[in-house]
Image (cartoon, rainbow, N blue to C red):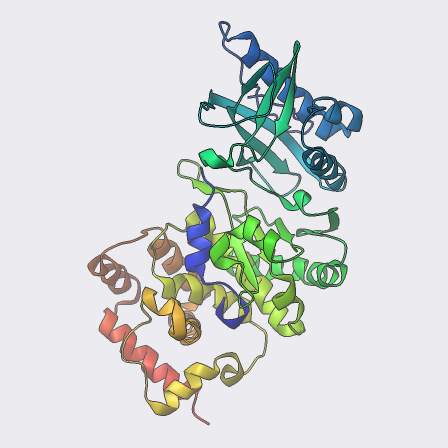
Length: 425
């Protein structure tokens, strides 16, 4: 991400952030319902049916059915938030919304409001965005259910927090969702975010095409870009460590299915303050950089060299931009004037004070690789090295030698010569 974006250490790490039934599927790729065991207690069956009704109400936009299963004696604030959530979902292009149930949590240590009975089964929301998700995104929901007389209700989504059971919050928990759609996906924002959303939509199709020009067509080529309302929503969507004012965008995902090599729950999340302040060209670079992470994620194993992952995303981001190298990489230009680098960027350099320089070095290194190998060769090298994950240096050196006919020492020497030429006045 350099000064416009988040390190792919973020993008790769966040691939595994959330990776950790009842199915109501109105679309063309149905998910089978998880059948309740025939010997399941009546309460378990009642809760499954409640969640089934809730899912159907969301998909069929039936507000009365949705609110009928909310505890009438629950905290009024909880009921208000639930109604807001339902209404905020109206414009979201949902292809699937299901709840998957697992073993119940013990409630012995909690002081709960009076009811005939309380239960807290493990619940995960599985939802799929139409046109973007090839499989559902799965998120944990800390739901507490209460029985009053013979009827079960959903009574809280925060009461289980003392037990470490937190409810995932999606964009619809933070305000009405507005969606602008294009050929390459859609932009989801809230009231107040319309200006940035419109700018992003104007760039989205071109960004998807630009990434495809380099990476090829073997990726979904549909992207969901989220524009949150602010830091609280950023934190909910990308985690505490990345919801900072210095980060303009983050590419996140639930996980990568190791069998199908499919990335699940991919989103590009923009910081509205930082990204919104970017001029047109940096915003274009930012989107292409983050969408490169979306395209390549299924081929990227955690721990692969950062100079390759981030540098490749920057290579695609800046490709064809016409931005002079001295303006795109001012810290590197200053370093070259003082003395050429003596090593390839280390993963540790992508944190702290050296981060800007590490990004710019990696961009330049990938430019050099593209010149040496051609773009198809650079892509092939990315697939080889990124697919190895956290490999010993000797194995990385072996791939470099096989691919380029050069050792790491020779690669460094060639890159240094390239730098001297690139930054010569």
